[in-house]
Length: 170
Image 1 (cartoon, one colour):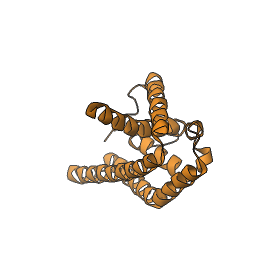
Image 2 (cartoon, rainbow, N blue to C red; image 1 turned 180 degrees about the vertical axis):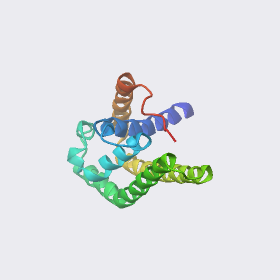
Image 3 (cartoon, rainbow, N blue to C red; image 1 turned 180 degrees about the horizontal axis):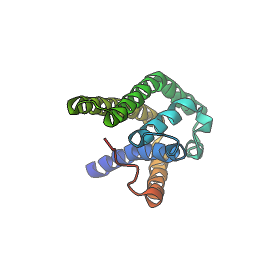
Image 4 (cartoon, one colour; image 1 turned 90 degrees about the vertical axis):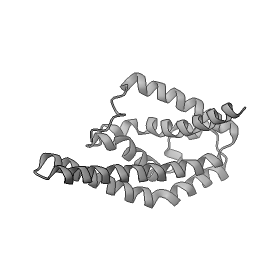
């Protein structure tokens, strides 16, 4: 029983992560920095579109009006923080790429790399917290539906792109 509960929690976490990756796929080619594509795409999706435009996944869950309002409220709560961290992360990554092409010292480049990694981690943690809050709004049936659909999206993603977007350059 404990194993299946852990598996379910992991599946839900994977569901949210994979779902947002699946939703982000149209935006991936529009980003100029490969290491930021998935994260920045997720941030754009999670903060800019109203709930009605989030894709078919939420529509298929048949969310009640209170659920829609709660999810919208959660997104609004995190929007400013996510946008700010996303901008900081993209700026730091741009600076890192510029440094790689420039004459900066190796120590300075390493320091910038650590900064970008820290910002990415902070951004990921913030998104994870928002996903956990959204998760609490869903019923167990809806969570199971999400897990199933995200597993399918993950498999579709892998068949289309493989590991190409899962690697960071720096």
